[in-house]
Image (cartoon, rainbow, N blue to C red):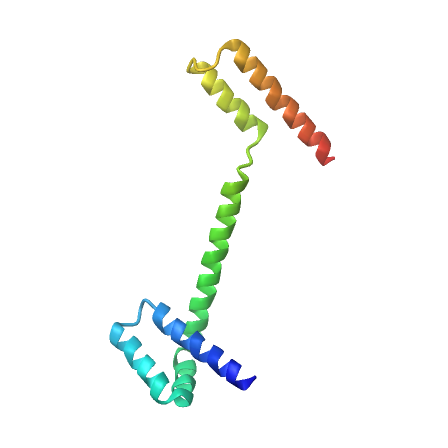
Length: 122
């Protein structure tokens, strides 16, 4: 169990070292060598000196991933209100893409769908 925890800690530290964009290449190389040559001391020193910033970077990555997932769900859901659909249909009719009969059919379909959806939610 301790070996697993130790490996997890080393992977977490090395991942943080290489994900930190503010650290130079020499700094990354130095921390990597320090962690390989003196692993116990290196891990302890890293966690003491860079632990708070390591935690801040992890929180920021989690927030960014959460925002990406939320944006993807919003875009994939693609929900629009009946008013938006009617506005699009009116625009198409105004530009001459839809005839009056096509507009009336599409409008009644949108209204019927919105009424069925509202009835299903009750």
